[in-house]
Length: 330
Ligand code: UT7
Image (cartoon, rainbow, N blue to C red; front, side):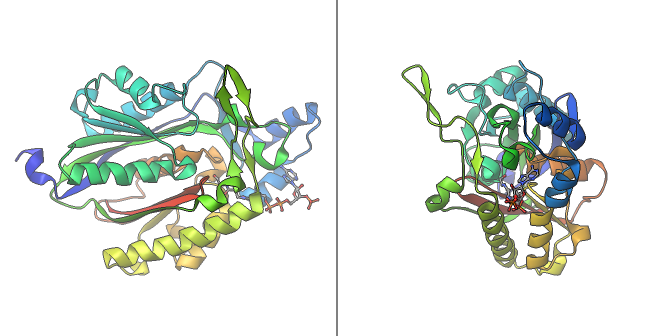
């Protein structure tokens, strides 16, 4: 049967991820920050966030490099090559250049020339946005096989003198291969934004007339983001389950954006999902923005937790303010 005849649904056929070389523990980070006069501790970071380490890329490494490695791992898991891909969507807030898109840079390295390729800017919700867009493009018949990639070098936009943000984020990439299928696949989804909260989490700077104008580092009202994240993702999970006609008890795995283990636990409680059904990798990756959901997904697929036929909810939330959920039958 041709792929065109299968375009009722899209489904994930492979996952992959990539982390840059250096894992930096809280103690190592605290020691480094102390030399800059910034006081923090492993105890504070673990108690308030659950984060124990994060990966920081070396100078010179690029978002595209990380994205290519994650994509290659996903293609290998799917038994496909770059030539089989006709759509590449990259979710990133830390692109290598203003233009061309990181998707085009990645496309060239994968040998997927001629495919549709573009970036999505929805900050930490970007991967879920990209996945839902790719699903719609496959179901419409526009494309047949997609790579959706979340790739970030957030270490490059952190203000290392701001202990309220610099201990939280890390670098990484995750990817999935999504293919037309007669079987679901993605069962239901929603994508949302409320731009009236743009100021709670932003990197406001821009390049103009050859200079950086405005603050070029990430700023965040942590407690405001915390409350918004729990509220919107709790409600979104329930709505998307209803859309698919599923009970909460039928959900096998909840994979929210990995920002803070306290946020993850609060969402699980609000939705009524036991914490054992939540995938949490924020302890080892930190917050990797658009990469966090596909990174966590890849970990749970590769360690055998996620099994064929199970229901998996992926959720993104972040700057914009943006959020979204996608419910998949694996
Ligand atoms: O991906 C985007 C989504 N981002 C998020 O979801 C992040 C959401 N927000 C959070 O996860 C939490 O709000 C934080 C982890 C950022 C902060 O935790 P919190 O429990 O909300 O703490 P807080 O901001 O209210 O700060 C409590 C105290 C303050 O000291 P005082 O005023 O009580 O004396 C901070 O100055 O903790 C202090 N503090 C720190 N202390 C040691 C803030 N950062 C640090 C730090 N080390 N790194």
